[in-house]
Length: 530
Image 1 (tube, rainbow, N blue to C red):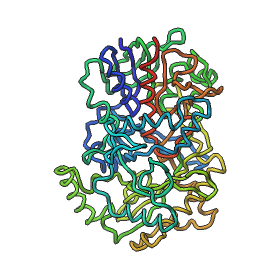
Image 2 (cartoon, rainbow, N blue to C red):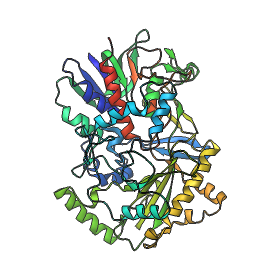
Image 3 (spheres, rainbow, N blue to C red):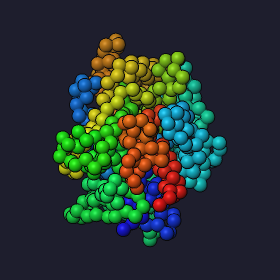
Image 4 (cartoon, rainbow, N blue to C red):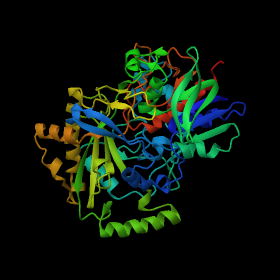
């Protein structure tokens, strides 16, 4: 018996485990389906390239066929390891725009406006630049500038300025718009995941128990109250009971799946899968959306200090291995997406609606396709898509993956904005700063010149940039799943704490916002009356 059971050892779960176990009078269990975060590929920042190839620590989900992507199935990698996706992502620290959180609050979620969530961002953060009105020091999550940046990140920033975009040295400060270098969740040349920030320093607490290899199959309910969790562990089906609360932190794809497997969801959909309805909550799994993204890749054979598979590249990589092992510096401290920007697809936009990620290597098929030679890539993603999809059950088998349908480009406005973004990205890459290295677009994108060709290229190549949200939406409407305190509507002692609660996706990478959500949730849980 534990006071709190946390389902999912990703970013939110690690934060809750650390914060709730600060009180020695409560007991906390954390259940993570994946292994411990022991692989050197997790801790070495550049190891993410090999993680992408070998699928290590990854659920490796696929979407259902997407009409907006010409019938293709999209790829949905999610972390399956302590730290969750923060152990396998590109480590960019970005919060989104002030307006995102004010929009949450305006939709009936008191306490979630920007001025109210900023203290939680600051509390979580130790920014090596120092504290100011927008940043904190002394928090668990280390945030820093890249230790050994590649020389082409600043070249991209210069190209962005030549294209007419302002330089922004801090995307998380007073304003978001512009081009610049990203800050990253690193420390001393290593990845600093939520597990390393929150969980690792506190694993020895006697009131905290962490179960790895523990795949949750359902939440146990009694009279519409969550009382425990059932899970597969070490070849057995086990149960744990919770005295206070069950905290669901399995992410935007699996939190709704676990709710439905537990009998919480749309009655009709549960009936289709042979699951008894214990609580009819039709919004579970609805409102799924994600940042749809397309990548332009260029060959640059003369730029040998870009990442690439060649004899020169192999020699540099071997040198980088020794440098990282000895000094935790050098080329292997890269997060690959070192520079980028937040820009408007047209001047009339009130805030940036596009994000750019400049990658110092050729990125094809999420990095899973081996490409030879040197080059660079640039992503453009749509920050606030209007398209909405769903997460549904494929069967009542708790070990089967869910049916994931982000409905990419299901609304025409999404395509129009992404097309404008593609043209702006190409405009930046054509500026003199980058033109000096004679980059040449790969044929697939180079052939896309007319609007019709650009649209066809996008539908053939666009996919996620790994930010699914919204499937257990926070609010007070008929399809909302949790209230402003993240409590599941109609069920006692059960909260959802992860990206699935976002009413609308934030305009930026989602890891820092999820950590903020969990920091705020920890305070709400601590002050709850039992």
